[in-house]
Length: 130
Image (tube, rainbow, N blue to C red; front, side, top):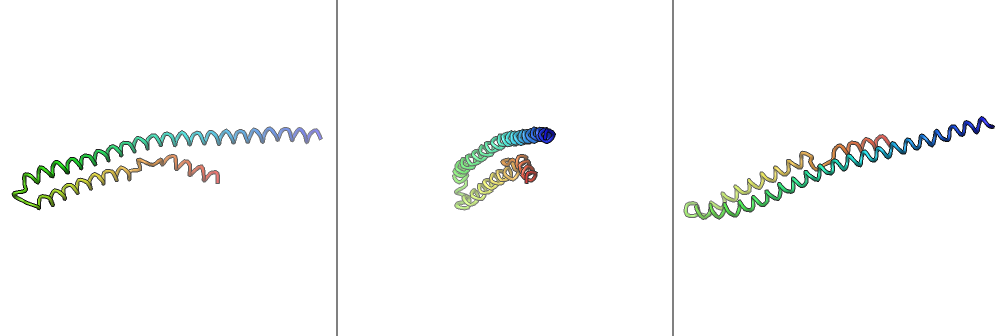
């Protein structure tokens, strides 16, 4: 009887100690993932602010350029070209707007607003646990 109780006493702390160790590891893993997500989120936030500033400056530049150059060029060349000057200016400013849009699109395509390392680690954790 005493040997069974002694072996049961030895098995109990081992199981509890194992569960505590697993819980510590899971908690540490969760903390690491949270820290990684916070670090990547700060990078995403900085890149998002940069993209927003570039977009706002682009919109303002296109607006001012459109107004001032259109007025100046139309005024200076109306006698020689008439209505054709309006067509030329519309084409030029359309190309400028397309260029700004493509630049903003390239920033998004580079993945500056995603968190690839965090997502990879979370997927590997999910796969390991399932």
